[in-house]
Each structure stands twice: as structure tokens, then as C-alpha cells.
Image 1 (cartoon, helix red, strand yellow):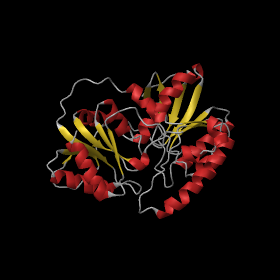
Image 2 (tube, rainbow, N blue to C red):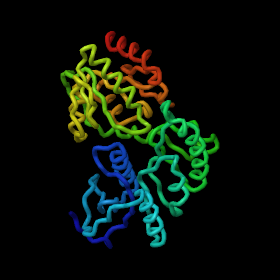
Image 3 (cartoon, rainbow, N blue to C red):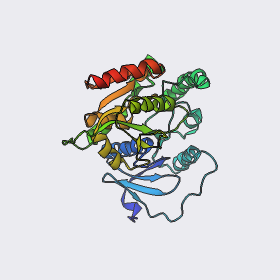
Image 4 (cartoon, helix red, strand yellow):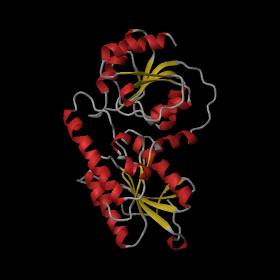
Length: 321
């Protein structure tokens, strides 16, 4: 805990739903905090649903804040909207960092004027079981982009997934692939023995391609490949599950891996960027191919919606490399 005299400093105030170092949203929030604080040369008091923090000198420390926010019975972003108005009336500069999916029109419409917003997220790919999302989300994307461009001076996108929904007249207000800044802060690569054939990250989610990953892993294990998994365990005989581990532990596994299987709905995951940095060959869903593709040679795209074709293509790719 830290205790510094507030009157000495000019602070920004911020809301973040997730600051966990071991989640994608948390790492994206910390990346934004670091770059914003560096460019603005300001200290930031960050409020989350469980505590209050001070971000300065590239460090996030628990602030002198004894009373924790109670467990919420509604989505945490409503609390972020509340704080945006609280600091608006106090005439303080406020940042809403995350959670900012483009489909959520309530956040975009209800945030107070002059709020600074963090990276916008969203997927352009939906699995075959997501017919409602396929019909509804593109409409929400276009509508919310209209309001975003009216309400905010600058719009930052975590990836370029949503670029195709941005009208040409608004493109100058937008910047894409903010997450790629993460590559600048990964430590340099040293030599590691590649003792793991394939590594996967598993997270059960309704818009994840979990079934494809599970079937593919089962198939590759039957071909005697050594496969490790972190995140949520995959109930597959022969796989080596590491469970929920820290990012530092995950990096140690990634460094030792020859191939990785990327998420089916989003290309630029932190897992993929770490794999690029540590010379892991990448297998990805070609439907997620970004507008700006990384300049790396060891990358192979297949159609995750065509499992039988994809598994043969992947097997041949691994065999020939």
C-alpha cells in the first residue's frame, strides 16, 4: 500500500474492469496505462471493482483505500459509467479503460462527455453455432461506430478486426492494432530447447472455437505428438494440462514449444504475439487474417470451420516443417 499527498500531483482518474496480469483484458489495460501515463506524463488513480490503485513509474500499486467496493449484482461496466459522471461533475479527467466491446451500446451511449476511452475490442468471426451474433453484431458494430465517431475525438482499436466496419470518412479518427505495442515490451529471446511439439491455450467461451481445438488436439495426440495446454484443462487422454498459470509460467512453456494453435475468433491474441517473439510456428484460422499481417514466415492458416480438411493440412504442415 502507498500513501502520497494528493495535492502535490495532477491526477487522471480511471476505471478498469480487469487489471489481472494473467488475462488478455488485464494485460491490455496495463499496456494502455503504461503508454498513456508515459505520453501524458501523469499519474493515474485506477478504480476497479475490488480496489483502488495508483499507477506511476510503470507500476500499479494498491492505493491507501480501506473500503473495498462491494460485490456487484450487475455488470461492472455500470460502475465505470457511474464513475465517469462522478468525475465529470468534479471536473476531473477520467479514463474508461476496459471492458469495451463494440457491441455494447450502453457503454458508448452512457459514458459522460470528455471521457477518454481505452482500446475497443470485438471479433469479426463467429462460429457456426452463433447465428444470432452473426445477424445482430454487424448492425450493432455499425451503429456504435457512428456514435463513437460523434462522441469521441480519437478511437483506439485493440486489433484491426473491426476495420471493415469503419466508414472511410471516419478512418482518420481511428487507430488499429494497439495490442502490437506489447511486442516492444517482451524480453529478448535467448536460446531454448524446443521440447514441446504443440502448445494450446484453452478458455471455454461461447464465441471460442473450443470444439475445433479439442478435436484437433485429440487427432494430433493420436499421431504421437507431445501437446501441452494451459488455461482451462482439456479433458483429453495424453495431453499435459498445466491449468491456470501465471503469464511468466506460460512464457516458459511457449519458449520451449515448436508449434502453437491460435484462437479461432481473434488473430492478434497475446498468446500469438508471445509465440512470434519466441520463434514458435503459428497455426491460425485464416478467416481471422488481419488487415496488417505480421512479417513472419512460420505462420500457417487453415479454415477452422472445415475440420476434416484443416486437420490434414495441419498434419502435413507439421510433418514438412
